[in-house]
Image 1 (spheres, rainbow, N blue to C red):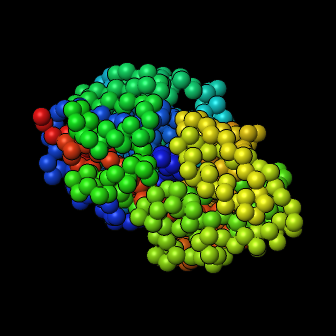
Image 2: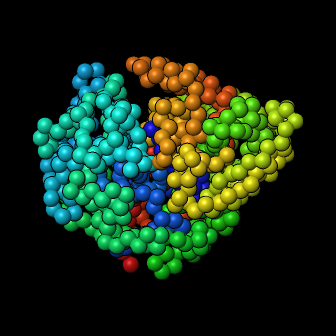
Image 3: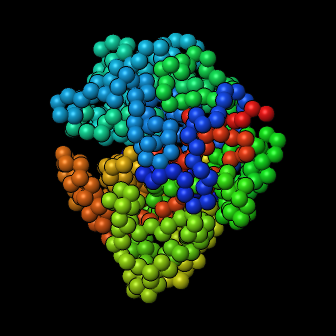
Length: 557
């Protein structure tokens, strides 16, 4: 896939993955995790929102996915905890290696390490991973990564294990071995199993939708307390064995997530960095107004982590009903949008580059693609011509942190006769709103990031009409269906030459851009403030520039 990203100011929806290097405009020097951190202390995470989902089956949104994978559960493989290009490399996590493929990449076998345990000391078994992968098919547990549905053989009519049925294409010949049989060869399946779908959940701990409230830990921390929307407290999982884990350093003794704070309050507290705020980090992006306070102060600027996100932020349109079931109406939005204004709304050129394609430059050979070659401020007259003299009255859903962005879209589209009514919703329910096909608004913000550097984790998830589901819809939230596009996706996925496939993905990007189910408007950096006594802070290139929780620590007072 690729994944959704967290909302603006919290950023616009992924939230994803960069193939960029460490550091960047306004960022401090990226530090390696073990260049100073020590065991002990309490790390505080300041957030304006609750987690959408911590259940690994349903966790497909940044930064929630990074948080879960690094702190609460492990996967078969995972990404290195390093800034820059090194962070895009995978290493074994629960598995002893990166998997062994057979039958040309259609069958993949993983063997579990010795010494893997849950928080109660019981062993992690291959059957627990099988069970969690099966859970990702359950309509009762929507919203998570859908690679298993796309890749596993025999899953077309499978509805998950909650009623006792299991999937034959996942075999567990013993407690240490898991074998996946795929519909077709997938050369990069070692990367696919970095996703939380491939974390373990014992069947005995099944709690349906309530599993979100108390996940059973296989990682370095376990949940001590979770008062939803207010506070989450993590303490050490004493049964996690660091000898089995080369990535997670687990420096703090305790991690406290304080939720429901105003983003401006979070920023101001971290700018001052006093008391416990000196050992705190921001969970979501600093606001544009806060960045104006940060950048002129070298001491504070040095504590701003601002990695390239590698994600594409878009204005999506509901293509399933009027007016945006008409390609001309969608193109009118594309031409009318003032991307310079949206860039200003999210922090200006220092924090975002204007996007002109769905694939970010890192996924198109480093070259920026530009199908329409429009002025940055749009082409209002062309938009009016596409509208044919009509005016449109449409609604747009934004998160409560996206007021400036929503108003920039509203103002720019009004120039062409598209009148937009804004409807703000809380970030914690944003994805559930746009991902319910009965509730999908006319317009909305959405972002996408590749799970790893391949067009296969981007365009198919966004524009293949066969991936649409009624609830928990992820990726193709615009409900775009085009049989020619779907046929071309199948042809590219069958290619065995990665370079040829990547060229083909770039060409498909241009084809879909002409249909305009969404308008790409920004490739952003992710500005995150940290306290002066936090160590190991850098934006991870695969997780949308989000802080890598695997290696954060605090200085001893």
